[in-house]
Image (cartoon, rainbow, N blue to C red; front, side):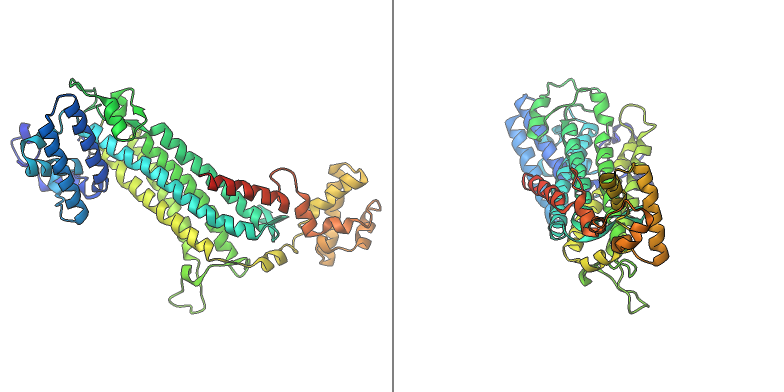
Length: 460
Ligand code: ARG
């Protein structure tokens, strides 16, 4: 009968129950948050006259010893202790005796785990923001080198209009910036202290929740204890934030996989971040972006998993909730390594600007420019201009000439209102630079966008 809660039981828990019930194998990751939470709680209990100064000093000493034991690997994590909260409390009592038994006054594991897990998630929101910024810095370096490098802009994976590669990468910078705002918003929204809610209904002890909130770096104290001990929105939010970020990473990864193929040949990943085949000696495989794409699915799984765990729970705490942690830990660790490796892969990737530009000469990328020319210079309504351009494209297909290189004599045959200056308009670089509306691809506009991200990242 070695359980802390064994008072009302007459037979010991089975080993099978211990295995099934325990979270100590993984929630031990929260040891720092747990010890800090206990220190704040004990400090408050002493100030409120619930613990003596001597008891507080003993608790502090004991917890510091435990911290050292954990960090040096000598702490004994026992499955029979069920979770880290009980493992640490039990060790504390072993170390300091009766004062250790007073630490749990006015507290429950329900508010304790809510504090620990919430603080872990809050910290990770901010750490992921830092890692995102470091990755964006590398994208920005490459983007700035390629504001003049033409690449086919696509819709439906079909050549659409010429853009520049810096602009293309700028699209990802926009996505990742939105991701940052999501992590930051979650941090602000959820920075609320559960400590003092106890099991579900608050506590009759004279606790000072503001004090513990302040000691633990929370902005405020939660409003309703019943909600607080069962609320896992903060965990769902980080899973959603990571899922969305991974979706963006996955889209970029998919492009890198395509661009690395012989068919595209737009980039080549460095040897350091590529892999070989065990049978085909010639191969160089883009495993990194493929895995990033794959891991995205795994992160979505954690989000769906926790949403499903939470959906049928009556108030307040239910043990189902213990299933909240592994998916979050896994998603956070996946996000961390993904951001790190994507940053390195981008930094070391060879961009083959020449191939990007050659690819622009196929698919009549400047067709819209001909239609725009007919509207602007010949005063032809856009719908008619669209039709005339379609005929020019058909002519190009027939002669096997891209519209950007079509000679004036052919264009004149299609519509006599077309003048010789048309060939300038059909040039690919001219086409890209013509799109100078705000947010457009023109090199000067792209440079403005990248300057915006530079300032944004510097200000962070
Ligand atoms: N290990 C538990 C969890 O992670 C801690 C809270 C347990 N509370 C309880 N009343 N059994 O959710």
